Image 1: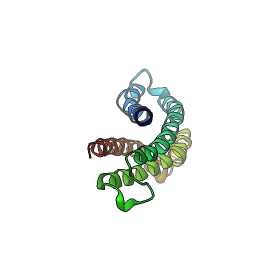
Image 2: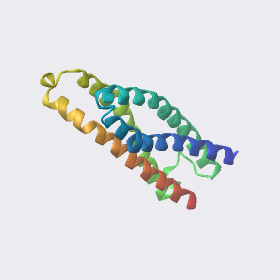
Image 3: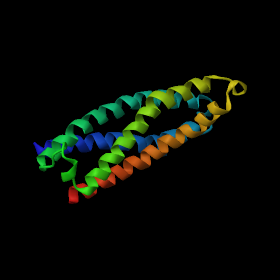
Length: 158
């Protein structure tokens, strides 16, 4: 059972983090290239919506399998005083990552999509700042996810 749970947990992490890497390193730069530039915004928006289902499905699997794996190792989720330090750090980072993902997917992303439909002269300074900072939230989330992955590797080794 542990092997299957670990496999599910890893597959969910791979889908989420691998998708983030693919989007940021491959797809978004292609969409910004000359042949796609005029359609960049709708392409990124459509891809993001499609990826959102993968992300939240992965999160559901991770949130189910993670506590089960800890239980298999004899670590009680309800007793933080018994957690290894790296687990406490990992779970803290996971909470931050989940909050960022929620904000990006359901607040910032949809708002930026609305802003992009407005003519430039109709956008407020705040609107322009949201458009500017939105990709940085996604980049920071990717870096945070990679740090969570590193913490997971350290946790397995303890």
